Image (cartoon, rainbow, N blue to C red; front, side, top):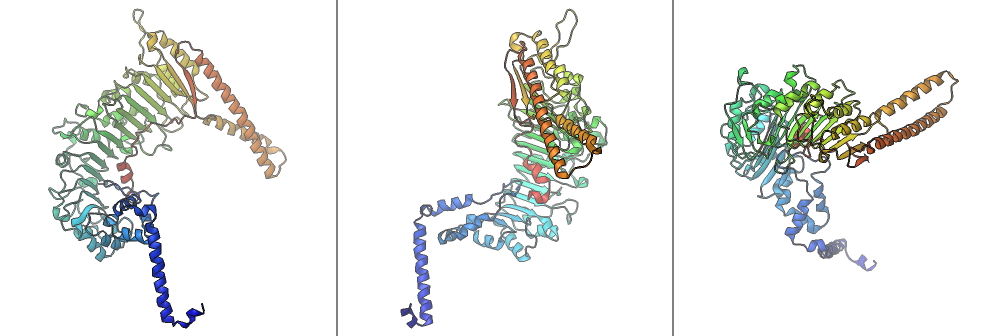
Length: 615
């Protein structure tokens, strides 16, 4: 230390700087010796890219659980990584106006850009916006929330240069500055590579703008300016390779003429490549049927229909207009995706469980998993069997699952034995039946009653609904009609050959304390407290202790009663010699698995629910 005192401050500063450089060089060399840094720069760049959050190019729903900027922390790891990241344009090619747009625009160099504008930061400077818009030749994707600026019309005019490599375009606006839903001129009309389009509010655009599209989503269009059926069919015919089509509160819902609603279609557009059709929240089911009557769809098209106006029973119009049968046209011969339905899920759920009612047809007919889903707070008038069977081709159905949880709601229309007998008669090839009747007393009993043979004349054999039925699954509760199930199995066994008898009986025991049991316990507790109310008061701690003790004692007694009830049902059914297969009681089985398609809710449903939540 004393020897350094003889050096002047300037020389000491120079020495310190040299030491810092030496230390930095040593650290750099040591860092390069790390195994990961021995990888080729190109491979390391690919690894960095995997740490980024990438949104889908169509309907870019942001994952709120992750951050789109966390990958930038890699810049702080070491000099080698910082230099490699800064000099890799691909890592900066997704530009978000809310995350360092200037830096991303500069470091992205000349690579194709994916631009997300107005989604987070709304006070983007005019100069920065001009700089971004001037790069339209590089735009591969543009997702724009036009309402983030003072004038959405002005924003559109910023993008006036051609976009030759643009493949995906999303334009979100509430129409504040849009006249009659018309899209202003954009990119000088030169978007030759555009394949994926999502528009909010906009209902018309310059002729020749959008052709050869593969993905289309239109939503929240003004009802007054929506296209006519012919205009919309013209639009579809210009995109014969369309793969996904979503129309949510949008599309040809206006009337070209009142008389045309029930008139036969005069024009059909074939969409041989369409994989998914989403129609959401249209005013009524007949409008959907009218649109479908103009389409020719292949067996590979999945369809999703949802919305209160189409499917909810609580509507002011007539009961007939709300029938689920009216969702499909009378002639479905051109809807090849409606053929070969093998599974049918019919679930009635109360509004507290159900978010929105929907109907869907999904799956591949080739794989024998084409499935019909009906999920909603449906009334009996919406499910008239003769109407359903006349429109929905379910005669090939082999598996039917019915779910009912509506008995404690205002829409608890009882579907009686007659209803189920009429419906099951339309399912002659049914082999497997699942009845999930949570809190719906009498629902299982009605279906079991419908499976009983019907007496004919003296010279005739009794008619047997679903003569190929071999598997029955029911949900167990304290009101399980075990005796009725056994009686039904015995009666059916006398009408069919041994090979066609009921072979598999599954009883799902999910909740050891059913809702009605818990309610009874609360009533007993209230009565006990009421009777003791006239006695001299005690402190709150002792009251609480007594309450807990009462609860535990009641729970133990009721659980034991429930187990005894379950064992009685098991013995009664296992002793039925007419059920040659296994009688199996299963515990803890999730009862709602499979009631909705794997793809539900769809991306179109999630994206169009709310602008800020989607983008």
